[in-house]
Image (cartoon, rainbow, N blue to C red; front, side, top):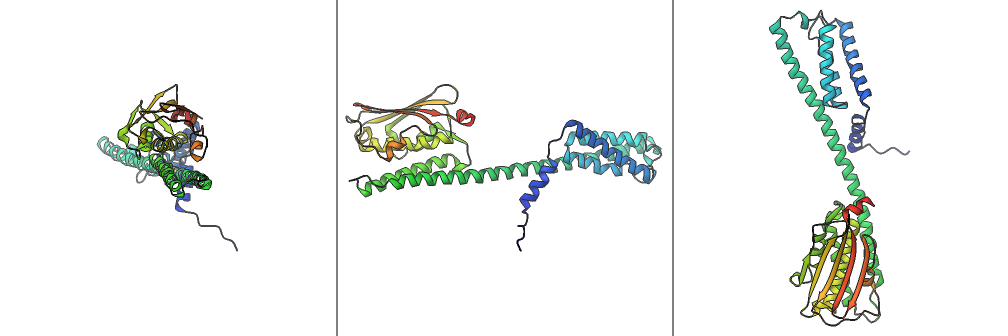
Length: 327
């Protein structure tokens, strides 16, 4: 016989929070407060018309529940309504029969008691709201983490599946593969492994050029934010450019690299990689996995390679965090 799995505490809390925090029209909230006052006042009238004990005792649950389900403002409204009911309807009770100083003392005690109840109910409401928010964030984070893990797995499968090119040294292929995996890991670190929606463009550039003697780079550009669809592809592309520069370009000799970017419109950035002072280069005749990383994909809206004799120039159009979120 199949049994249902036990409901977790998080599920119970989620269900309770949904009931308590459910959006309600203002008219419904007012009607609920008036209904609570009517039940509390009617019950007290039927019991003893407020003649014995504390006449506002039955109104306490109304105030607490109003603070919990409707908010502090409606709890204050319930408290004011309770005072009116006690004063005008329960006029045979100890409240209206008391002398002025005694009534004032009762009013002070009542105000403090109601204040504590309103604060308690409101605090419980805030706790439920905060817990529900954290629960939703945790679920979204777990879903995003799984999505990012699948994307990383697909990227690794693509990097590994190609294997060494014909005639390529397996050790060299292994070194290139390791470097690309490390670049993928650094870009994921910048995005908090899925916890963050965006990363600084400057941080992505700095992280990507870190393994290639940063002292030989000149980086300049305004503050900018990249969404996750652009941050990882850019990091991988810059790592590929750096690897090629060490093997064939400016970083293979005494040259240097200038990386500059500028904002172009809302949520768009143009980035340029320019190699200076390196050996004369020519466009490659074969294309491998590296060339796939230097093509438009994800947040890389455009990738243009200029194999100038003086040095490689790569221009990219990037979709910033604003454009990424609006897509």
